[in-house]
Image (cartoon, rainbow, N blue to C red; front, side):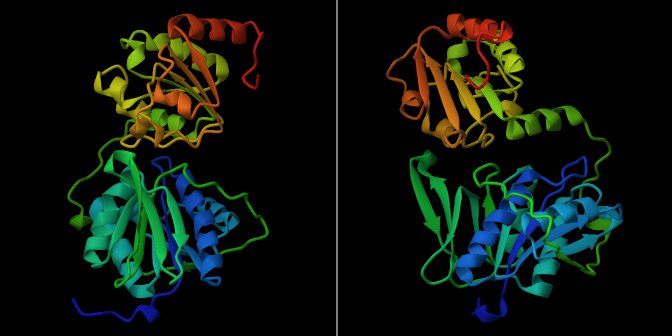
Length: 345
């Protein structure tokens, strides 16, 4: 492959993701905040969002992207973009990149982002660092994308030196969401990208909202009560559901619990599940394998309940309780219900 002129590539793009309910995914705003920080390190490169939507009103999403700090929103509107399609999204983004030539493209490491991002990078003949937890700019002005490797036991920082754009997918909830700035007004530019619905190999006939709702709840919850192998069976998760309900939170699970069939994958927290960052994370019967810790160790407060005093989870816990979770958790729930304890205690 012949060398390309890297100097013609300018600016940082964030691919804005829409949920099935036509709302902006939280990770898109997190990436706008990260792009602003990268921009300041590069000497104020332009921060742009690219939004793919149908012909319904996209102004609410544009407003959110603007208030998050985007200086420009590239809008691609077409009726065939109403539902996500691998082929249509890949073509639209590739055509837009080839037209405008951004230097960096950031994508959320969601189910959707993980689907189209490698296809886009392959079609553009460029590199992609997947599932990142940290972004920076190195001394040569290159995107330094950091991700876990070897089962999370090491962190690798990867550079894309010879091709453009530099691409990375970033896990939701690992980066802070910027405070809205209502004074910022992004310029909107519509891109004329020709799309033919016939290239889509699948067609969505119907959407069931239950799984999406549950997944979103884990991603967005301020309080999570999670269970692991120590829960012993699926029925015992009822005591965690009771505690979560009393706290106004959600129920999560370790990979061991999901693999055992006790909870759905929507509830899985960890390297191969959801990355969460709640204000309070209560780990019940979770030993603390490094793959699980990678998905929740940025939580503000971590409470670990485990009968094994040597469990690795205690190494990162804010508070640890050594004991029988089947006695401790119901007692906590009862105390909260009786207002003897509050979630902030």
